[in-house]
Length: 206
Image 1 (cartoon, rainbow, N blue to C red):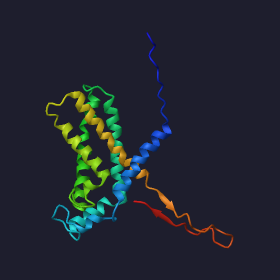
Image 2 (image 1 turned 30 degrees about the horizontal axis):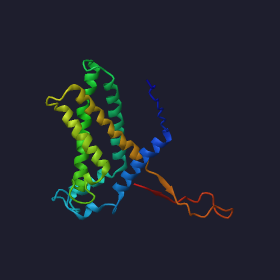
Image 3 (image 1 turned 90 degrees about the vertical axis):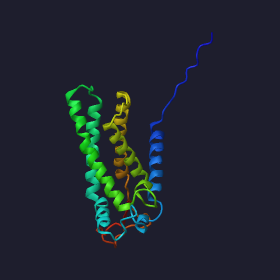
Image 4 (image 1 turned 120 degrees about the horizontal axis):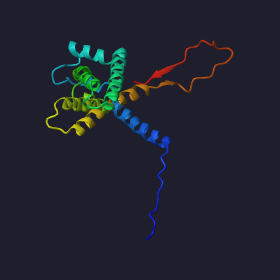
């Protein structure tokens, strides 16, 4: 009887990283394609025009850098709590207490989504909330979070898998960390006649 052929599968971590980051770059290109804010040509939710006061305030909030970093911090805290909860038994009191905090995180993410929907519209026109792949991931995680609070007969193992899906929020961290500050390469090099404190020209990619 012939012996089974043993095959050794080698995984190149660098290739895996390149593949993952390549997919993220594709998402960035999709999210940034077109004009900077094509949604401004349409009334969000068919109600709020571009000059609407509420829409302008919502857009100011969601594009405010401290707001984005605050949401990012909340995501990190949420994922840390989720990680602890996944390693604790269901009957563990600490795990149950950590799980109860999820409702507060979910409320924050729903509020953020509502602000973005008012600012950009929901899905039916270019530049709207669901036309951005990053927001699509957020929306999916929010729906999963809502479903996890209403099990409706879902098995415990399936429910725990749904909770793990919340870790997709960490993609927001990758998105933020990948914002490069691009130094213009064609600047002439400094010479002895030029001051050393000449400011560099940078472009921030949003």
